[in-house]
Image (cartoon, rainbow over all chains, first blue to last red; front, side, top):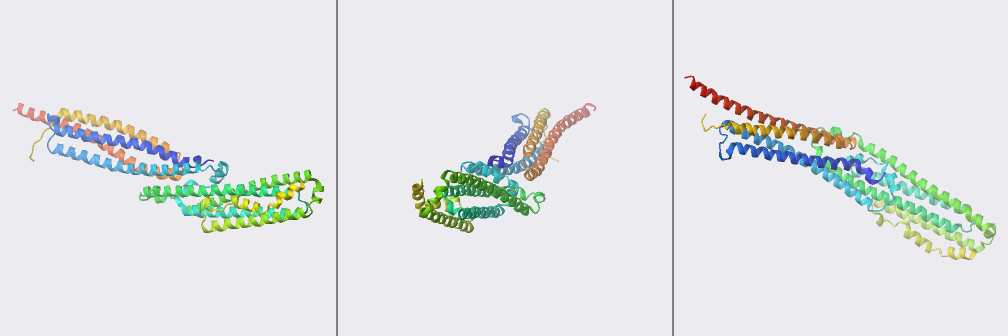
Amino acid sequence: MGISDFTAPLIDPMQGAQSILSDLVGAHRNANDELNALMSELIDGGGVEQFLGTAADAFGSAINQLTSLSEQRMGVFDQIIGGLGSCADGASSAVDSVLGAGLDEGLLGRLLEHFDLIDVILNGESVVQAAISALEQTLMDEISNPLALLSDLVSAVADMLGGLPITMIEWASEIYSVAQEVMQVINMVSQVFSMLSDIGNPIQDLFGALPGFANLLPTGGIMGVILSVGDGAIGVIEGAATDAASLFGGAANEFASVLEGAGMGVVSDLGSIGNDVLSGISGLGDALDTIAGGVLNDLGSNPLNPLSAIPMPGNLLNDALGSIPSIGDALGSIF
Amino acid sequence: MSGEMSFPVERMREIAQRILSSTDELLGQTQNQMQQVFDTTSGAPSVIRAILDEVLSDVFRDVTTLLEQRSQLGQNLMQAAEMAEQTEQDVMQSFEQQ
């Protein structure tokens, strides 16, 4: 599901109704003008014979009352048309900003599938922010797990490493790349929902004062949103876990391939070079832990910060790699 | 009762007919547009559709009532022209019978 599909059930009916109602209001205002003109034509007589007397006065009064009441209803239509336009424009702007961000459509779609557009609109931004914060926290927890698994793997095969360090570094980089993409999507979706929450206000302002509107609002809606968002968070994390599992699977195959190609003879030649490699891996693990902690702290202090404000792993990972130049040299000497 | 009275009967009939015709046309157009709006909003999520339909139904009902009153006003003008004409004939005949 793309962002356009997500918002189409809101935008399309509103734009369609707005257009039809604008035509209707135009037709009725023209008809009112025509009625006033006919009244003037009859009462003034067009310079020939006037319609005069109490009957004429009553007729003129009835026309004035009728057109006045009609104009009052057209004013209500004007408000509805304005509200519909405001909502549709707001949602369209949100869609445009998402489309312009170049986000991964698959990840965005998977996230959107777990959100209810109407609940977001009716229940406001605070619910969305809470859900997004929970989503971010859960994602960060998920990121921590691959790190732990990475550390376990390193320990398990530490004495037989050949080309594995490069694989692990690339692997870690890919994990963070996926995490970064998910974070971008979450941040963008939170902004979209904030905008959608904003456009929900005109709807409630517009219709809230009308009798019966309150009865239409879902009772216990906030809890419903929380529950549905909770499901969404689970879905997203499941998706992220699937991605991570895929990466792990790929890395495992690559690991097997490296071992097979290098042969056990290479392992026996590691000597002090192996120690350098292990030291480098250990340094990388520490760096990644630091990165994860930094991201969590930043998110905790300001959950909806734009992504640019968060020190994402790309640069830090490069720094971490730069801190262990001995890996490249060591591997070069092996092969 | 005092003051000048004048009943341009033919003009009253003509304008009454124009009011009736234009109102009939506007009523048909409005009902058609109402249906179009409801068809359009039927694609919206249920909560939004319920809100829009309720609000629009109220205003459409008022607008329809106003159009019916407008049509009634045209009929009243037509009836007034006939009454004025009949009154003039009655008065004329009352003098002719003397």
